Image (cartoon, rainbow, N blue to C red; front, side, top):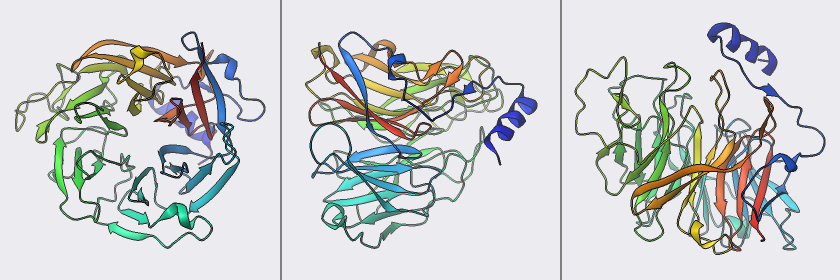
Length: 371
């Protein structure tokens, strides 16, 4: 369907005000991005349609997944000037290959229904090897079916399966859960439950404990429920979906049902409908010291809120396992009601700068600190 027609249908059916969409041609208005003093932003790579999840291989090749484009890209800065000068297509025609991860030189790619890998990828960029199927029995639902994947400190690959709906309680325990499995695809087990849709997670660099974002349900109004930042220090926890949202908001349909176990509330309630996706602990040394081991979150932006929100990067400062502050770090991709970019994922680079993918603009930005 034509995108303009789709937006009109959404407005007619649901009565929501969709932010104006700015043309993606011409110069990139980076001067609109507001950040704390000393931070600067530049375009690291352009012309990467639908750029989503990112992972950096040992040889400094950046691999980028997509959701709608069906492609996986390899991006290289061969002369070290912080600007990509080589963009290759690793694979095309895939089923929403959103998630990418590296393990022992192999590139893992998560499609909706399976996980595949490209062996020894960096040494074979001139002749991409045929993918090897790691596991192919994940649900095929497209609703919240795209996946962010990453290897944890335990050497296991973590793979989410989102809820196949806005709000529902499926009899299939695979849904609304975060799974983990061995690199060869065996030993798949549920690690955490009650997660509507996580498209970003990371492990605390000191404790090794898992933290993740989760997208709240729709159709409860503009201001509830919030998106969430959650902490899973061990397996077996339940994070509320579909019974409860945020710290104590019962679901209008499922709130009266007794959950199967006690519910773990979020560490931080994020903005309502901000579509919190990628999150990373800042482990570099370039930013000021107070950023070290703190959380940055890519908020993709609301699609059905009367007044748009998100389209920004936020930060959560922790004191132990408690959130001490939640505030905006970088904003301006939503400008006077017009959208020209939507942050998806974040990646800390070896020099301490961070990369930000933008699936709407088809770009990757680099944010660095220079006082």
